[in-house]
Image 1: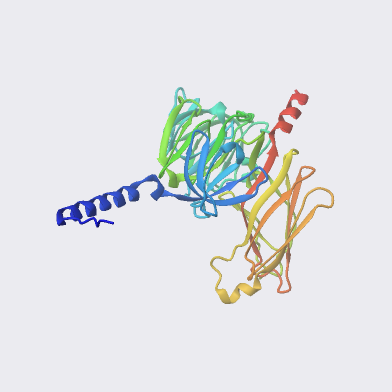
Image 2: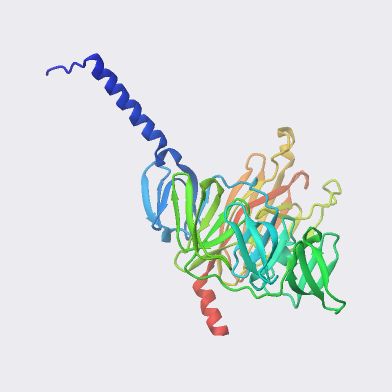
Length: 411
């Protein structure tokens, strides 16, 4: 077999071609692969490496490093691995009647003062009519108000000093809101820096059935019927009240998750449902008052405690990651963290999980019946010291076709 001999000049050319090929590979979309989690209609999660999302087809490498291409109809959710407890903290949040949520800041009035101007870091400035607003709140919002299923009898404003004013928000001013109190005492001007949360007496309305929900890292939730992921960017179209339909592009690092439409199913955050404390006793935990806390769509509980959630009647399943909330605890003290997590739903349905230093995390995926869910923490032999639970990615799977059928019967 004849040997191929290369002259010195040809060697240099081949070396240059190899360098060019390596450079092209380094800047190709495959170099920007993103760790992600895909969740199926059974709420089972699969760790994948995302390559793209295009024309409702998601491309990814599975755990066996095989390249897969599937329709988004196979999944109910895509979570980016960048999602964590340390998500961006917005200045304020505004909730719209269709469930969209915008982080950002109040800029001022729009129109004749019947709308407010809102600025979002990625979306820019939008004008939103007051009749399209459910609530406006600082990040330390009162979630019982935020997640009300029925509107209050009147607009309600809670001030930073704890006072509450009921009445009618008449218009938006340059620095806040003008409200007419129910006692007819005359208009009151409320600067925004004195307001903790505003809950308007507007009826929520269902989102269209053919849209996907995008979650950004700052707490923003947007509805879209088209989303694309290529390399390190995400593109989607969105239509907010008062603004035309437009395409938005932002870094993929700003995207937290996508909730897909799958066979008439929808997802709902457990953290967005009112939580009632049935009982608690922290007298043995250094006599500290350790109430449950909902923060950044995560639920923090300290044993012993039992809480209850009245979930939508057509809820089918509940899934979450339960883990010890001991990130800042020295290793030598972790043995004190030892408790049992008990979840009940429906008559006789009980699921038990034990968390301790040797098992800091468990995955939950259980059926839900009869429209309610209870979570209880029972301390171990060491008592309730450091028995702290974090529930994250806590989602409910709801049969939307059942909801639609019930709504038709009601109407």
